[in-house]
Length: 112
Length: 318
Image 1 (cartoon, chains in turn blue, brown):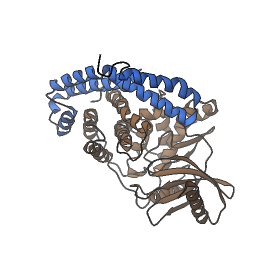
Image 2 (cartoon, each protein chain N blue to C red):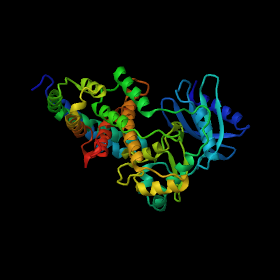
Image 3 (tube, each protein chain N blue to C red):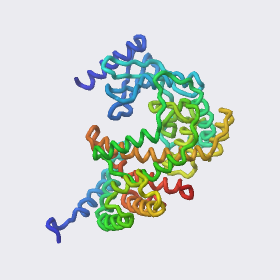
């Protein structure tokens, strides 16, 4: 058990998201209801990142390493400068996997 | 000064600008960091006023000139009634209020717009042909979109409000390598899509929000209209309402030029890339503190939706 114990941060966020979805959205309309929905979606994103983010980060670093890159800043600069022009197929595969990981956290329904 | 007093002062300004008309019912419709839109009534006539605070990079007086020129070119636009700039640089413009709907989801789904939906894709082609016949007005500039949004991207990284974006770099390279041949620049609307179009049960009634108008390739407007974000979740490419052919045929008939679908597709990719940058830019408005908003913050995490769309759009075309 961590220092802060139970409930975990994920469980706290979940409880607020459920309140937004169950009580706030039911009791509001128009712009306020829309903003409550946006807030619930934001919390759902954070929940998914807490659940998957650490593992995704490891995988991301491993993919970058296959291109000899430490981080996205290096990769972005290398693409712009043409340093990876002879490996663009590989670069696209790495980037495609990164985009899929981001989408899985930000909006998993988007792909369907 | 209290809001009510400010409103009274502004109502007096409007009255003076409109020849002493009696002003009532000033009601704010929407507002951002530098602009806000309000409805009001002048001598019984419903009007809309847009105000721009001092210091905005865009010049509302240019926009007002474009709106007037658009009307003369036969584009359906609200009549421009007044446009003034104050000594401090703030501006306002007054146009007639047009009845109708701008919300994409309603236009796409409500029964009321069933007949409109059938004709809108072709009407948009005809309207765009008229847009591209607008006589260029003083102050309108030609903007290299790749250069401009590359600068925006770099500034976001430098300010710390946006991260480096390898996917957007890849697409930037593709855009540069596949750029269509240059054409004689015309007036383009710059943000021609559902949301900036007023629609009634008969179809398109007015084209609004001309603040991004500039000189450029006319195909930019056709491509932007077909960007996936502006389909609002519906499958058809033209605003989620119609097929490319409907748009192209109407445009060709009205403009007397042939549309090259590959050029429109390039602008569609360009638009999707630009929208991704704009999503980061919107989040930065929150992150830098000029407007605190969880809605703006959330838009920052939508960049990956555009990245996904870009992979789809470029499948087999890299």
